[in-house]
Image (tube, rainbow over the protein chains, first blue to last red):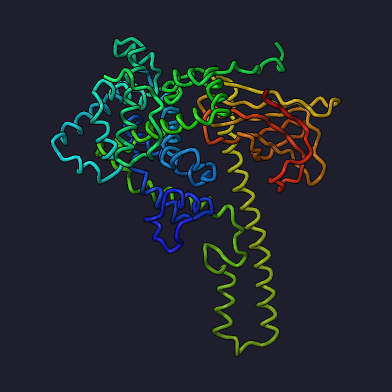
Length: 209
Length: 284
């Protein structure tokens, strides 16, 4: 654990999670403030407002009750939390028609396109103020067709075959774009310090355009 | 096919197949069997596990990018509501102070303090005795009310929980994404058995056991699961009079794959080491 006199809002996620495991509501409050905007955005762009609020409530209550299930050795805390949030959202999306899910994911893709075009002439430094902006910057480095399939697959939760059918593309093309998009995104996020530097990229980039 | 034939060892995947299906796995697009085979390989291959974890970190950055691009803000009232729930959860795990009500001295105590401070010097010993008697009766009545209210709250919570759990059980045990393993008795003369259900796309785990003998006084049936060579306590089974036991718990990942599952008999509070083995399943 970090220096006990460090203010809570300067503590690492891991340190705060350890405190939450000991019923520390103040540490929980800091984690909530850190991540609620992202969890809410994920839920509110795919579900109706009431469902989105329910998802946020469930995700953070799960954090409060099950914080001990997070294992630092298996990845960042945010990965664990967003995996739970995505699972909750997809669980509720099952009652929606495929087309509704695709429409909502398309709206997110349009939002990304607008955000990226509005800031295309701004210095890279601008994007690096916050993690979210840094990830947006990394997304701006992807060819639009790679970003599109990543966004549709992640947010709609539909199979790659469904997405290929929707886009009128062969399944292999969709898979290839996802693969290349992921590899590039990882490279940029690592360069920007968002992800830890690892050994050589495990996914082959031989076919990268 | 009988129950004991249902769980078959999945065909091994190699590292190349893991690479080929990486993105399907990351986005939850694998079918149940391939998902199980994929996870089976990850358990024994630290290299592939590392790759998967790296890419999970990549895809789950997307909500942060969305938050940066979006104008949507979580309503402030949500946090107030959540913190109230959290405070409620926290208080459940602590014994309430016998002399406190909502953080303040109970009303009978406040009255007594007040009387004592204001009129103590002018009271006769008999009157003091009467006041003390009233105070003792008040304590007893308060205690009785507290117990009754706590019992009612507990029953209501248990009922609400049961309704939720029924739906969850159906979701987990009856879907095309469901996997199950059969737990067999260690004692060959025993007719008891159990089943553990998981779903490839859910972290919930349902365990049922039947024909269990009623445990001796001071003992309960516990469930233990082994993951990556480490045995973990998963919970205590609720047992009815017919010897049917049920436990529902959440793993930290969808479709958890265990190396072994055990049901043991031991004291309810003993959650660090497995006790006497009753039922078990071992993966090959």
